[in-house]
Image 1 (tube, one colour):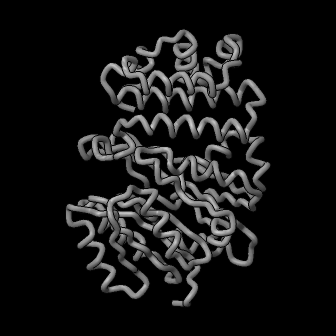
Image 2 (cartoon, one colour):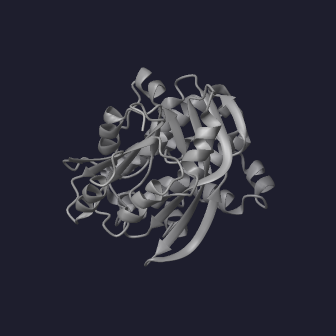
Image 3 (cartoon, one colour):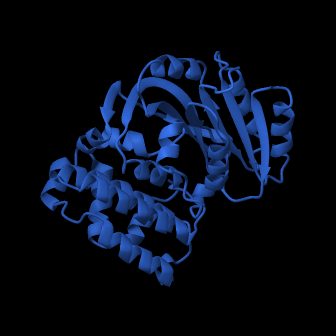
Length: 332
């Protein structure tokens, strides 16, 4: 392997002993070898670190590091400071790289000036260990600049939602001091990281190839726990998105409202009697101030057949039927 690998893959690990070996093997089984795999043990207590350390001892391009528990953002930042590859990829400790991903990315990136490449992924939702639904989030085959994401909200979402469906040029991240916000412990960290990237001009490529398998395991994800800082992170995402997009048309406003109403009220549903909590009430006031409010009832009626669930969410929000929203969005 070259001293400067093509890819650095950052894999934070925390108490995932049931899954982490399969995750690591999905990377080691790639038909492409010019990469380094950085296993960042974020203070695991269930033997996950031992599994990762044993695997690393058998592979010259796999490196194990143990840190104090600081959360996924801290672990990813630790990996970013160690990484030597031309491009950075991220993987969660219970997900999978699909066969041929690294080879495909290499072929797409070779001899091109690309700062970020995004690809398609599949998500499976598990309840009590059984898959209840699966869906694919598809990228389009496109090359564009930062400004082009303002004109297409679907492409914008495909860029900002997650980090593990992308390869990020390391020098681009270093040049702009782009790191994860370590104050965020309970979700939205990927969105805020990507939204911060939008402050800079970059060359973006999207490809439709499916490269990653993501799992949502109900009852096992920290992002599903309630913490007031999660509401703060949702509001921060909304603020950054507003600053970038400018909320210039009704159709985009409706999509933004539906997306953030879902995020905010799903989070509220994880706590008992949320509207009796002063911190939650303050976060809700901030949310109301930041959310675009000029999505007309006329537009909602017009688009009901196409987006029935989104329209119902927005109407309930406009009516201040917050309790009904929490019930409607339960278990999402």
